[in-house]
Amino acid sequence: MRHTNDELAQNVAERWCWEVTHRDDTRVARRLSCQQEVDGVYRLDEGAVLDDFFHLLDQIGVMAVLAEARGTAMQREMVPYVQDVLLYGLKTRFGIERMNALPALLFSDAALMPLVGFKAQHVRQGVCQRGAATRQGERTPGPISPAILAHHIVKLNVWDLECVFNGAIRAWAKAGVFSPQVTGMADGTDLETTERYTGCGQVTRTVRLEDTWGTGHEIAVTVYGWKVLLLLAAVTKMPLAVQVGQSQEHEALWARALVTQARMHLAGYARLSQVFCERGFMEGTTRWWLDQQGIRLVVPAKTNMAVTAEAHAHAAAGEDLTVGRRVHTVRHGQGRTAWTERVATEVVGMTGLTTYDHYGTPEHKRHANRRDFQAHRINAVVVRKWQGQDQGPAGKTVFLTNAPVEQPLPPFEDDDNRSLIEHCCSKEAKQPWDLGHPPQKTERAVRVHVLFTLRLFALATAYRLPCEREATGREPVGWQRWRRQLLEQTRELVIVFAQDYDGIFHLAEYSLLVGVKRKDRPPGIGTRQDVLAKYRLMSRH
Image (cartoon, rainbow, N blue to C red; front, side):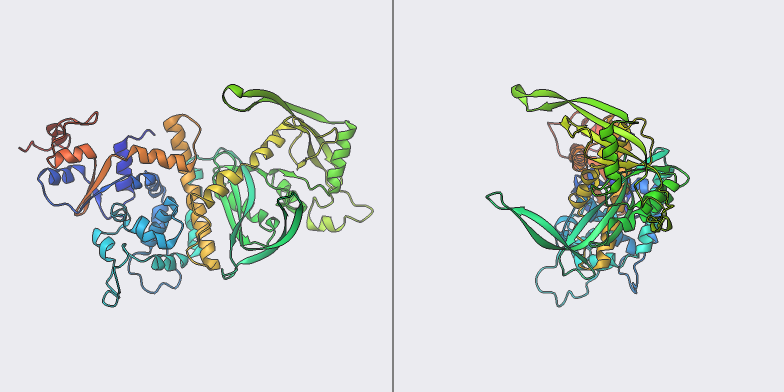
């Protein structure tokens, strides 16, 4: 859909409103033209980030489910619990790292707070006056304190959170966001903390460092925190499944849970047909389980595996192989010194490798040393040349797959695209979406924060990509550029609150309505009489 500035502004003010104010430009324009008092006038640029995303969530039923969200052991609520969820959602969308920064960056924004259910007096005085008599100094602005918001959001029922966002992902699948055949990319990323986080895991790893003379030294480093496991849709880069484990837990423990969760979300509307992941993410039994589920997989093989040596031997022999070659142009340098180079990539495919003993059920694996043991066959793709770098006839990197290898380039290219997961989700979630700053230093706070952030990231990604393609006809841009574009579209708009209504006007329209004479008027903005006629008001002299 193609949005005008007025439509975007209306979506910000009206569609994100939690039944507090109602959009009525004519009513508010009448008050302005009559010089009557209004509750407030604010810039709309910060609200542009919200666009009509939350309206779409309301249409597919997510907001109604959010209204039913409850905190565990919540005996009394000063404000509806859904407003805590909405406030934390604003914090997530704006990428505010620290809870203590909320009063200055969010709670004091009198234009945003009415959109999530708080009045102007709530921003100035708070929702209650408890402790006002004993308070020393000025109170921090905002309806509630950051500590209260952190305390409440951590009590969010994790099961309710899962149900809300899992149901929303199913709603996106029903809306046709995904293609009928979905390719998934699995990966894990560390969420490092300090040892002061209760319930955190710890793992000791060996890190190699080099001094100023180039001499390498290996030291042991203990890392504290958790591990976030993701399964993303390859095309939309939308998280289909999320799991949180301690830092010392192996990724292979969560592979089946991720695949099962993603298949549950897509059931009835799309099918998870392929999965790509790192070499340590899936063990042989999990790979066999995927094969039995009809899911294709491509996984890099470890260098010390017998099946890797067998693949190298077949590649060196050059018998019963299928060869795939690709040549593309690479540009080096810039300006007058720029030059191009033609580089080649060559891979070979082979079928029927029989030395992968762990490729099967757990019972099958236990019989590997028996004389009558028969291994399950698996295919492989060996890279002989990558971007012009020759790796010899035996190749170097080996990919194991149950996909056909008559054309070995597609499995190799699919796994090559898997490396994008670290940039398209993990870094986006850690930086603009503030994944690494939970509201409290507890295990529950970390799990709630990770699930909340990544589920919101998934929903926002599913909304943004198709709308952006329809509006621009180009490839989608990153989140930061997307935000800048929305800010540019609404930077000259103001929102006016008057009792239970709000109106959104161009700054020039607003000034004309209140009686300011303007010599310089933007294109499309006429005289005061034209503005009054636009809002069906009689001319007043």
